[in-house]
Image 1: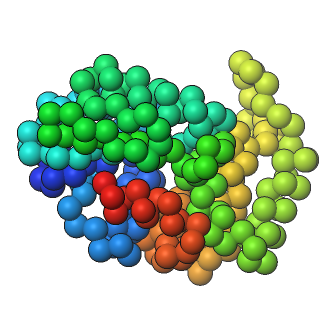
Image 2: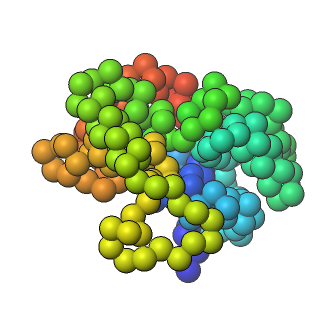
Length: 216
């Protein structure tokens, strides 16, 4: 059964980890009028933007936003979301953070970590504590292990056990998990860490993201 939309503003994010993180950020910001929607992966964002139009309650939505990782190409990520917005009949912003309006609905896009640089939400969160000694140790640990482990080969069938070990596909996610393993309660996901208060969500690193959400 499709989720019912009960709030006037809607924010689509890539997955459950982002749902948890944004939920924690909403609490810090005292945001109560924005509903989060799990796109279930960046590759499914296009379909999710079509699906929400069919969700009960969408007719009352006045603003829709999309948050997506830049990955290797911030402009490419933005262009991909813009194309999906246009295909599904939404207003299309000309630049990141801009609100476009059409038929009583506004739409906007925020690409993390921001400033048109590559990366992801983990990149932005890491910036808020990267100078802490434990963070630097966690990063060095992942770097050392990545030097020891061989790279994954395309299409390879990895064996079980040590001979099949490979360096992380995403060093940024790996160092975040290494950091979370040092906390009083080790957690596997960044969003769970946000819910536990492991990150200072009032840090200046999140200023642009907080501003985007506040203006949604």
